[in-house]
Amino acid sequence: MENNVCKKCRKPLPEGYKHKKCESCRNAQVQGVKNGLKAAAGVAGAVASFAVVIVTKGKVNPKK
Ligand SMILES: [Zn+2]
Image 1 (tube, rainbow, N blue to C red):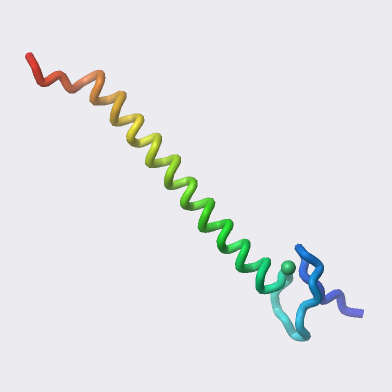
Image 2 (image 1 turned 90 degrees about the vertical axis):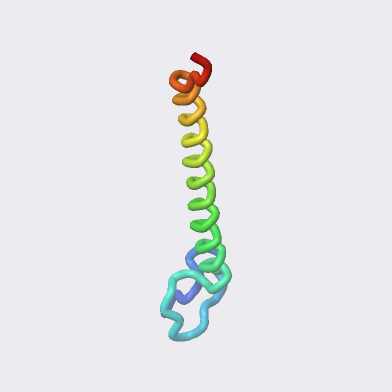
């Protein structure tokens, strides 16, 4: 007896389907990874601008 159901939502998978998750769960996973990268990029950007603020505050002093 084959256990050909999606590992995530238990939806029956088509015969010969080579993935462990159904198409919609796989798409959701890809989307999640993309969102994760976007979030990471956003955090990195925030940290970078924060660092710039610190650096410029301590260093840049155009008058005199
Ligand atoms: Zn699924």
